[in-house]
Length: 347
Image (cartoon, rainbow, N blue to C red; front, side, top):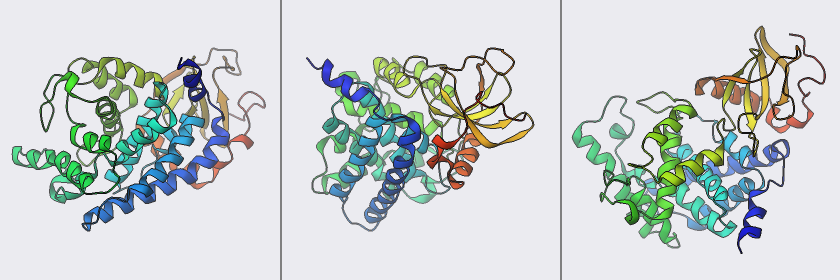
């Protein structure tokens, strides 16, 4: 049966500390590539499919080894790069979801290409519509919706673009009850890959700063998906998506019951509420150096009180933290940081 093969993919071959130092290069290379692809299309060239496949293959191998490293990196956003960074993020999240579903490596590569190119049509959307801070008028919304057809057409004229990528570019805004666009497809008319990208696209959009809306928390995004899981999205896939990235996905900023603040760096396969956290702040200020806390093995704080995640902090907090951790080179050296509880930090 397939079970033997699926477990091979779903088991992590690397911890996040090891995976992150490699994943950073992969993520940087892929970021550059998707920007180049978008620029090429803007200039009327076709999509460089082999380059896209090569970049996605590296991302897939990273996600197979440890999905949390790439998930965490996909939360680090640069200003003014929304469409290209959103595209890469959706690719990573969709591959993580496919991995959770037990897809094979080749399928995951196809799926990742679909995610990477799903919004390529937006390069033909006028900037005044794409980056308008206020609500779009009815006319502007119609122009915005055209990115799905543009995307399909761009990929049709690009040699070697997988047929599934054409379909996903065209159909990632279709919704289960027929309320989506451009064709108003219903349930079984929407292909599997388009259903997957519809979920990850929505999740990433909600949890990222956009011109017209501040980033909201993962919890908010899960709520939106859960509310629409019969009307808008495939109900089973919504559940599998939460399983794939965890209740507190990597890259989430959290406050703990002992008032320390940190960033989730790794989710636990079974103990979803007890992730591994990089502690960055005590109630009195920054923790230097930061410390690693594995909540699945360390249950209590230094006073013997049970440690819990008290609340999720706004994505802006996570963004600031992740940028400074990356710039300080700490994401490369997680393994060298002290573990919380081994030596008591001076609080």
